[in-house]
Length: 296
Ligand SMILES: [Zn+2]
Image (cartoon, rainbow, N blue to C red; front, top):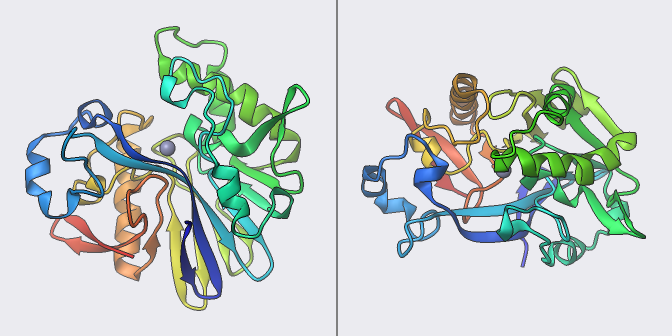
């Protein structure tokens, strides 16, 4: 069953691809300290850390935003059928993500915009599907939206991949099967701008990657922030200077995270990240030098 939220007159639905203890925190967070599990034990278990394995719970989901006039999809997960070796868990996946999207009553042709907060492998996979021997845009009538800085950064790395860098190797494959095939219907964002006037803003928030975007939704006095991987895991709200191993500009990633959390705490925005475990969305509150969450 899909979980939904209401922000003003706008409905937001989480379209799940995967949920589970996907990552080892020691590998995922270079600054991880096992003491954190004790310090935050009151809220970490069972939704955010798996007590048995010690692994962090991660969700892979897209956000569907339905306004009275537009259907918008934020981040299209890992996707089916894709060569993701050596990431064996994500290789040639076969999930029913598409059926979950369609259970909302929408079909792929109803999507007006596909917004990619960034171009890592787990945010663009359903951009394309395998049809008649080629990767074709899943959302035929949509404009895809990507930061120009993000696309150029990825393109610049394509010919100089270190064969030992598995993450770079997988993102290279992702470019050719999930990004290049949609570029003819893609709008490149070069500065923060409105996508839909008075309702949806695209903000450049570099740090996790050079062209990371945050999507700001505003409706009838309520606001939400779709922040991609600025915070991967809720521990980074309580420990906001802790980057993931995948934050490409570490100092800027911290500054951007602090600014986002400060904004959400000051103004009561609903934080809707790409990978938080249940209940997936939260309000942010100041707590000394850091922040805490109330789940929504
Ligand atoms: Zn991600």
